[in-house]
Length: 338
Image 1 (cartoon, one colour):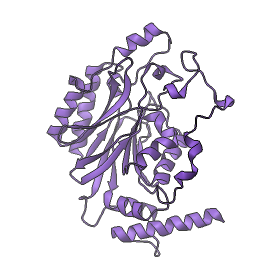
Image 2: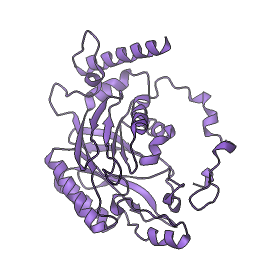
Image 3: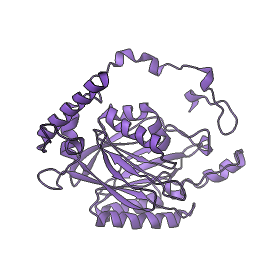
Image 4: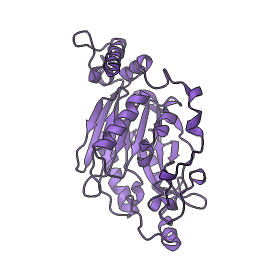
């Protein structure tokens, strides 16, 4: 019974959002795709186009990976995209290591580059030239140990956001990284107007707290570089992250044979915007900003009916023996130190 009531409530919200956005309804009730994704009555003026770069890297050849990404950026601009998003840690093709000793880790860490350096600088110049926002991903130089990060460059060539992965994969080579410590958001200025954007990176999306933190800062769109198998459960999980936070999401993954592609996006109502399949290519998702905002004003989800004063347990340091783990170096994982 409760499920039926929730379904009816969602349909009513979607209908209200559709009416607010001037969208048609079927039998008096707007369909989810109509409520959150269809083109507006004034064409593409409020439709944000997000290009997902599902590409094969040249191993850890940073110069060649730069050239590959530049070609995709040009293709995205030709397809009138507003944002291009790369897969995770593109500058080294997410190449890691399997021998977990300090010498191996130090050699791998030497591949890190500066946010102010020439590699990222090439994308800043290209963003200005193409009038395209670019989400570029790389192993970032950082005091002590590098970080896994994304820098979002606006269409004027300015870096407006740099986010470092908080949930590093400490069960693998990312134990050799410095973890990020917050989830920034930014008002990204685009040809379609300003959009509040945040980012997660791969493993981050498997923790509800990541997306929740971005939603609570007003994120309307969360871009997510990825480097792993996107199976049906992970995709469903990503869809739920959008739905429960009333926030659109987009993910760019590596294709086969490196991973399995499936780059995708969901609107704030959880409706799929795009399904990329397994193979290499550029895939563009269209997000109607007017419908997105109308939906967010009427939804049950997001921050509408939360009770934060009841959630104190969520910030407690709880030690449950069954979930104790060692990291890739065989050391006890200590979350407060990461």
